[in-house]
View 1 (cartoon, protein in one colour):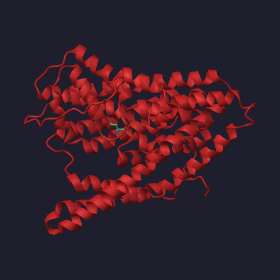
View 2 (tube, protein in one colour):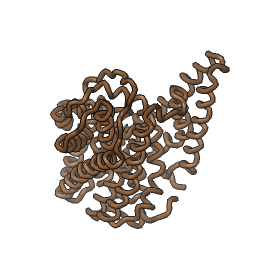
View 3 (tube, helix red, strand yellow):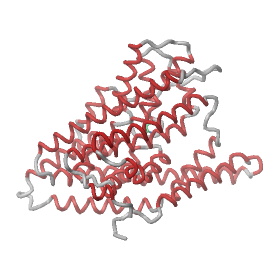
View 4 (cartoon, protein in one colour):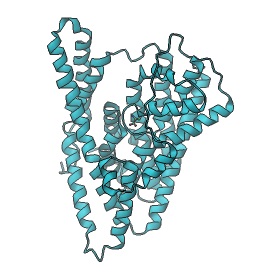
Length: 421
Ligand code: ASP
């Protein structure tokens, strides 16, 4: 086993951690009356919540330096800058395309299965302010304070700064006496930090799953079974059918190999509900297991985690239909087109953290004239849906990475086709 390979039996151990977390928390949740309050509170707060939050913090902790060093070292080793332009154009184009496809699929399935609304009373919801408009999102790409961007975790700004820095380093490599090599080395150190953190994943995931189940129990459907089941179905459809077709048609790659290698990434996304916190694992898998060269993956993965949210767009499409039906509004064709357009745009502005998609949903509802209060309904069942859609979001980032890499001749197909070590 090399110094930079993933912990042994990671998938198996993470699954065991997940199962145990669900089991123990379910016992606590359903037997609450028989358990001393002090013990219950202690386990909830200091075992599950604290452990889960520490694990998410550890992952987030490495995101910024990892993205910076891998992007800088990737770009500084590019042979020409035209290539960077071409990678960036394909990446953004494909991300917008797959998100458009995702929300359209959701609307078609919603229509085919005649998604009906909720008949009980609607809880009220106070929309969370401060979600970025398109104007703010574009402006965030160009921060006026380099360190501010890093401190605020402004991913788009960090990507921009890293590109700028990488280009300058690339152009001055002779003058700076091979400084770019140092960035390579830092990158290796941060990769090792990721691996060290990953070895705690089974415990981290145990705590995260436990904290979800402890709070809400196992009833993931609430009163909205049709919405929840249809949404999970469309998410899985997009994950398995759409991405398989895209990988096959655009890059002639075997989707089964892709999915087998993505299982850890999907599990991390599922248990953290955050594409941003999953970046370290996505980056490692896409580069080391799927064979995408670093100069492509270091750009496509962090940009994808920030702007590409196919799973979120699917939720927003179906949720809008569901809410329209709940309040008895018949959406027109023009409004459907508007939903597709807005879901593409808002996915760029949606933060890659838990439940962010339900916040930007307010923007879509507002634009097509639907009441924001109805989001309260969706929130009641959002926990599990957030977990599933985040897994779809990150798999989309990885699929696009493979497609872009293949088209740029930057995919090591031997590594892609290799059995997992
Ligand atoms: N949790 C999602 C993500 O991080 C965003 C969302 O849909 O709420 O990708």
